[in-house]
Length: 74
Image (cartoon, rainbow, N blue to C red; front, side, top):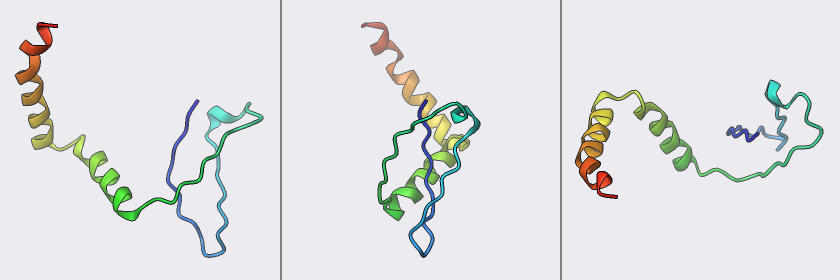
């Protein structure tokens, strides 16, 4: 199982990660620490909001409709 979440680091540079219930039987996990660019985090939050944006969803539907015939040719 893969679990991904962005955390805020406190002033003493310590990070405590609470694993979800699905990891209760795991004895080992692989951890990668990546310095997150604040602009990137803001963009990801906007993408999360887009999934409920009616105009964005209408654009996606229109794009899908435009490519239906091309997809059928494959």
